[in-house]
Length: 191
Image (cartoon, rainbow, N blue to C red):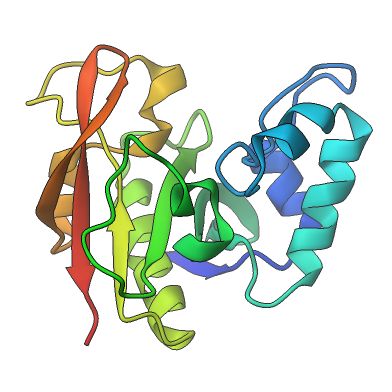
């Protein structure tokens, strides 16, 4: 059976991919970049983060896409209009122009499924999702690691090579560094 990528409309599947393993743990829930205000991001703790994600999953456009292997959720990619994310005001990630681009900022694959190409399916699925919602272009902000190993906890941004294989090209350098690697702005024009 092949990998199927769909809009993230099933909250339980989103929770499987981005929720904490322990209910009392404080985790990202993939909200750090999704929320416009760092104040709101810091104020949302525990159950409030979970409920904020539940709200986002009910909204259109959905907060991202999920990858399935049969009925099992195996991956997540956060993609949304940049204007609705903290990238709208991020000083370390430049704006190339005034186009209403979409941002693709998080790619996660479940343990046991990594190294099987699911991240490639997720990037393609995120691009198609953005295209279906009228995005003129999609941007990603991966690390430029030149093939070096990226710590698993920081690999969520993807690598330059992953984005290049999906047809993205480098549009700009950034002032952001993650896991010791510079991040670059990669872009795919959909017009």
